[in-house]
Amino acid sequence: MNTLTRGMKPPVIDSCIPRVITIAGIYKVALSERPFGYCHYCCSPENPADHLTLYLTSKEKQGIFTRLETIKKQGLFKSAGFKRNLLTIIYIPGFVEDGRGFSATRILEAYLNRTEDYNIILVDWKNFSAAPWYMHAANNTKIVGDTLATTLKFHNRTGEVDLSKVHLIGLSIGAHIAGFLGKHFKGRHKIGRITGLDPAFSLFPLKDRSRRLSRFDADFVDVIHTNAGMIGFPISLGHADFYPNGGGIVQPGCELPNLIENKLSHLTGFCSHFLSNEFYIESVRNPTAFPATKCDSIAKNNSGTCRFVIDGYMGFSANKSYFGDFYLATRFGASVMKSLGELEASMMAIN
Image (tube, rainbow, N blue to C red; front, side):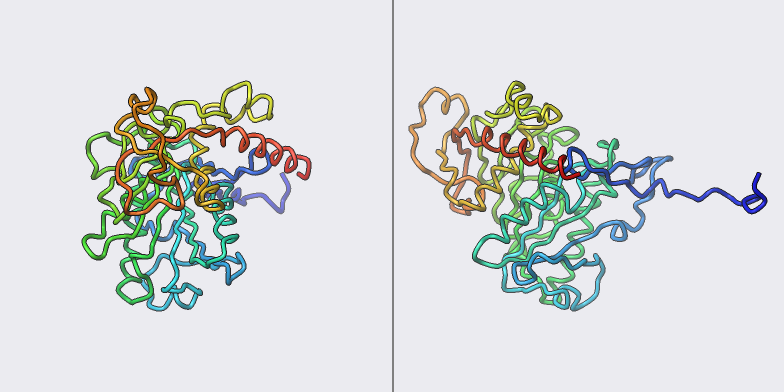
């Protein structure tokens, strides 16, 4: 043994800190040896605020991020460049995704390319959602939602944040974080809007709305269902629920032959679920891209009982005047998968 290293201990690797790896050149996902949670092998979430990161940016800041701490410090948001008069977009990604990962980056770009300015906050909760610990991530949605609510409540009291101008957007399991956050605010202090992008179904109850996203969690809750009954929730959860192509298991463009053709077979099983985010992003770019018809049920929609009229628009343009279930047909997914295949190929070539 080398005399210089005799008696020295090997470096300690913190098994509670996730590793972030990149898949197919563009997807940043978190992996951890141990989950955060309440079990004998878990990393303790005793101070959850220490393990959450918020990234603030805006058009004025040219997309440059300022890291916000989830602490009670008056003036923190204002000093970081947060503007009370702007609409605030808070994006919460799904299971395993880095806070500035693929879906978050695409949402961010869509909003930055609009004419008007926004406060845009990306929530990085990967410490609570790292793979392969889905069960713990599902349990942690309440911890994360409660922690974020405490932060917003404090900065609302200091006059920095106008809750009526807060729009939470949650993808998959992140939609339930938005719900838990929203449950903390009642009456005239409610969050302005929550958009659920194919809210996750596994380990979340159908009937007990206190343990999942519901229409009572904000002044207006809209939901886009793209994989209902599989990864996504099979029932309506919001004031307005949108079902593109019936909201079913396989969206157009996500058929296996199409994925293979575009070299996206690794998205098999997740493609339709993932499309909820792409639908919303496209609606930010083009607010009237997805006209929809209100109808009582998928059966009536499929039978043609509900005559096509434009009762509303899915995504960005949805508003408090909407109530009920809305249906639309679109081949949008096919073009998205083609573009995504080309993007992955280009990124793999660069890397």
